[in-house]
Length: 149
Image (cartoon, rainbow, N blue to C red; front, side, top):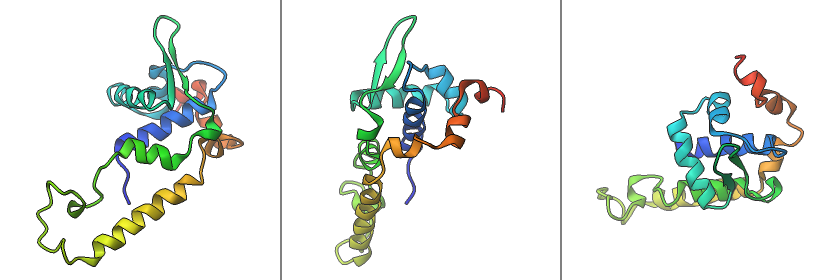
């Protein structure tokens, strides 16, 4: 299974916010530290704030923080919410499906089962579990070390 760039950015963004729970973080510092374009990041910030994963504050001293505790954010939910209903393969898309084998293909069922198993395995992982006690990650996500690479 391959995740989209948007989901990859979403998880990096959430990990950064979880690593800095004590303060508001800015889009610019996340972009620099996590090697993300500010344009892509802005789109993901907007989506995650609409979904309730982020709380944003506008203005001179603005920024963002987690919208709920890191222990309550399940990675499986983040993947499902950000990926949305993107079909894994062409035959999963009703409108764009041009595969003549769809009605008889057993692989379609196996792939659907595999996708469910993939998300179910991520349901057991919280954002807190990814960040808490992960000293190597926390060192990387320090703003001072971000520009020093």
